[in-house]
Length: 266
Image 1: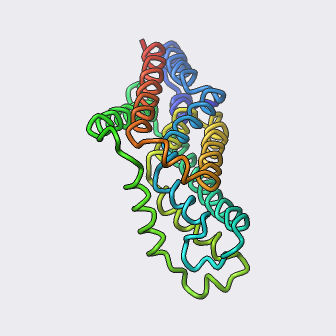
Image 2 (image 1 turned 60 degrees about the vertical axis):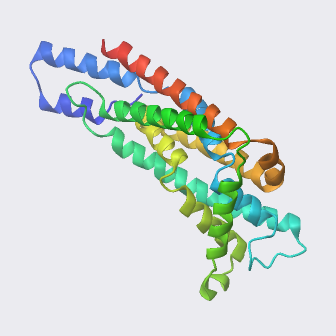
C-alpha cells in the first residue's frame, strides 16, 4: 500500500540513522498489514450485504417500489416505480458509501501512537463491538421474530416524508427524490456506513476504491432484492437469523484483522 502519513512524518523528522531505519521498517510492516484491495472488496461486500438485508432501508425501497410511497404519482406503472425507486436509493447509497470511504481515509491519516496504528485498532474494536452486539441481540430475540419492526419503522418514515412543492417541480421524478432522501437519512451513521469507514481506514489510499466497489455492489444487490422481492424475502428470513450471521461475520473479520496486526507488531 501507499506510505501512511505517520511514515512520511517520521521521514521528515530526520531521526538518527539506525533508529530511524528501525522505525521506518516498523512503520512499513504496519502499513503492509493494511487490508489488501481484494480482501477489502470481499469484506466490504459481505459486511454491507448482511447489514442491509431486512433493515429499514431495505423496506423503504420495498414499500416505495410497490407503489405505496404516497404522493409518488406512479399508479399503474409498477415497473417504472421499481426503476425510479432503485435509481433514487442507489444514488443515495453511492453518495453515502463515498462519504464513509472518505471519512476512513481521513482517519487513516491519523499518526500512529507509539508505533501502533490507531486507525486499525479502532476499526478492529468497531467490528468486535458490532459482532458482540448482534450476537447478544440475536440471543435475546424470539425464535419466530419477524422483520415487522423494521418494516413498521420504514412505513413511518415514508408517511412523514411529504416533499415540498418546489422539489416536486424539478425535472427529476419526485419518487427518485423521495427514495434518495429517505435512504440517505436512514443510512448515514448506520452499521454499513461505519463498516465502510473502518475498512477504508484499514486499507488506506490503496484500498479506498476496493471498499467503495465492495460496498456499493452489496448495496446494489440488496436494493435490487428489496425492489423486486422485498415482500417475499421478509416472509422467509427472520431478524434473528440475520443478526446471528452478521454477528459471526463481524467477529471473524475483527479476529482476522487483529491477528494480522498482532503478527506484524510482535
